Length: 313
Image 1 (tube, one colour):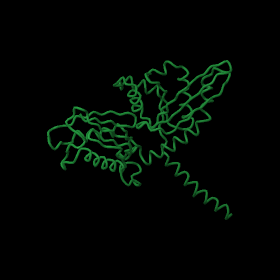
Image 2 (cartoon, rainbow, N blue to C red):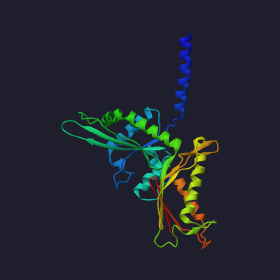
Image 3 (spheres, rainbow, N blue to C red):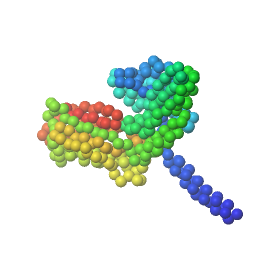
Image 4 (spheres, rainbow, N blue to C red):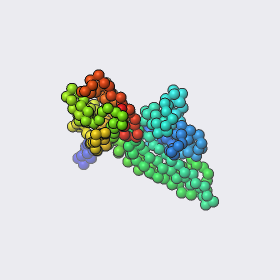
């Protein structure tokens, strides 16, 4: 009886601990998207490839069967078109606009090759998971169905993805949980246009600091503030950033940590790279130049993956 009682206590102790650890894992919302070659329009790539449509459907189904919350790419694409979300013809921009509009935490890019031969047909599939806002790679795997005497693309796709999916998901979940806890890294590149009257040493603000130094102090403060608003605020000791280089015409930060989610009211809201870039834009718009306090800096803003590009004009 004592042994059974002890066993029950141990089970309760370690079992509950395991359940608590499992509860700490935040399962992401996933959208499966087709791989698009350079020059291809991601808005129409599925229309031209029946096999890819089947493969995308099977990959999404695999996530659904494992309890993940998924977003249907085709449905979101149609909704975005109806609402006229797209504002540019640049393919990278269009892809990112779909991802942002979907609200997905992770997108899984899926590339499928259907190979026919006299010795059998095969499907090769490449799946890569990215954190939606920063395009940080979380997991990637390649699967192969092996040659089979069938033209059933759905069956071949399932054969290709089934052996690799568990490892793919485990790595993806582990890295995503790490991002939830510690935040994501983005890069900031600030450059001065050739015809700009300013440079990195232009004196700005009430303290008359050089522009580069004033921005670095602001960056330190905002990363600390965001850290305190994040889910892991109890563990947060301050923001983190790393300056890669500085010249008269530019300053680069290759690693700036921002949270994936921040507290708002009683809940948590997504904090995207786009929202962070907006804070940078507002900082420069409010900045006063010592030699000309009435002047307002003209700022260009762009994003490429996890890099925020700021141009001072």
